[in-house]
Image (tube, rainbow, N blue to C red; front, side, top):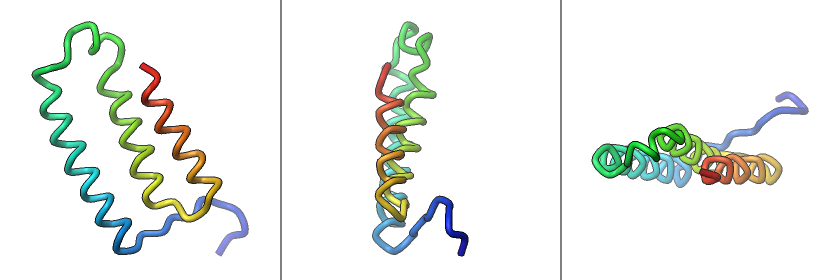
Length: 81
């Protein structure tokens, strides 16, 4: 194992949380096709939503506290719009 790098841990609970967040994210993404306005689409609603889901999934499988903090910052990056 390398002394530096990003440690990912995928135990049973992390996999369950990943599947549940991916399922809910897909359901929400399909629902927003009918509810998002043109103005929201113009200001990159869908990419910001995907960045937020990336941060959530990253927080579920991270292996140390520093990367958990980075995942939290990615989640906040998606919520800026």
